[in-house]
Image (cartoon, rainbow, N blue to C red; front, side, top):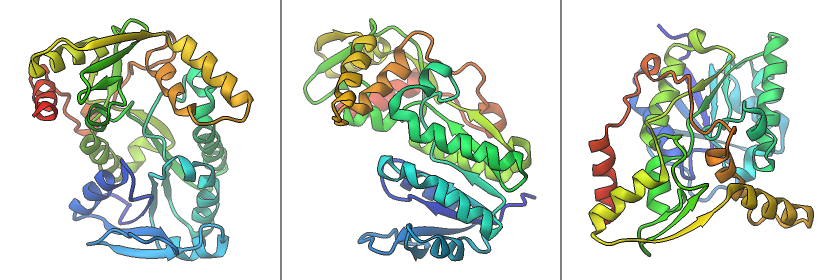
Length: 296
């Protein structure tokens, strides 16, 4: 039986939050509570919600009292606040903290130095320090980009609405990617057996694919040849860093492409824990069905 019973979820909205919340709620072994900002206008339904002032350490400590684990899926605006959450969790006696990683291979030296991951790297470093002091345990999950969401909104360089593809570094670089549902299942799996994954960075993926493989699927199911533009992730990094130097953060997210397809950035995970977590890898037919559904 897992030592984790009471789970607090921070960041239940956004692109990933609902999938993780649904997975947690579906597990009868967990008592799930969502932490919401006091000024939140759309708290989730069907789950206990506690509000707090995120700038108040006392408020956060009070919210975390009695919780065994805190799961953070906060988006970009909240990444820099995670150390405050960690401090409050420690004082409240929380056993485990899962930070909002859920993306690129930030343990890779090259990826970890990309500005877009700075706050995530800082949070994990902080957690490792606190874990080494015996104050709290952590489990970080890296899953690559969200496969289904990324294809739906065009984040992976494939725009189904306009039949256009932007291929990076040739488009044939293999990368790991995971569906939202499988990420949620991964969170449940590590919390169900936390001692096995204690103070580790865990890698998981639904599949390893390439942009060109995905493009082939889209062209098959749309019945037309797409317009293709090719770009270099090295150029993307250079252009983005130039903007950052001028205080322009509008394209910082594009550095994620460097982490996915740049040589030596670890976009293809080598040591995944799918079997231990019970996460099924998608077959070619599964991916075909996923793409087909987006083309209808």
